[in-house]
Image (tube, rainbow, N blue to C red; front, side, top):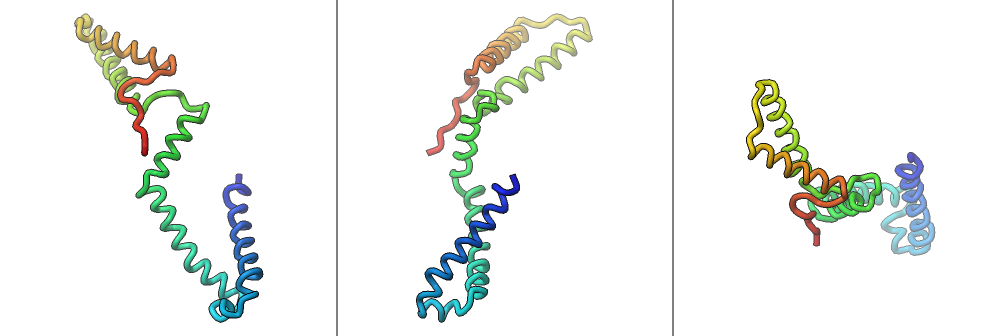
Length: 145
């Protein structure tokens, strides 16, 4: 994991800097005026490149829909994620918890469930069955354009 995530990027950056300097800048005297040595080239590239890459990364994660789309695609294509639409916790799980608490309180007081409470539990049971079968509950997932 360390090789593919970190070391490969460092090696790629070193490779790009070396190749571009010795094949492009070293052969053009007009560029040698701007970058007289390889160290000057690296300092300039790092000084401009690192802040620029940080800015691009910030925009990618916080200011554009690209990252949200990437996460959505990964979520839909990953076989280890259970198929459930966004909002399933709000639409199924949390009402289930609430009704279970209500049922436990009523049982502890030896009270009966009302027909409305029985219907709510029946609806939650149907929603859970739909999720277990791989369907969606609630609003369909939003599509990012």
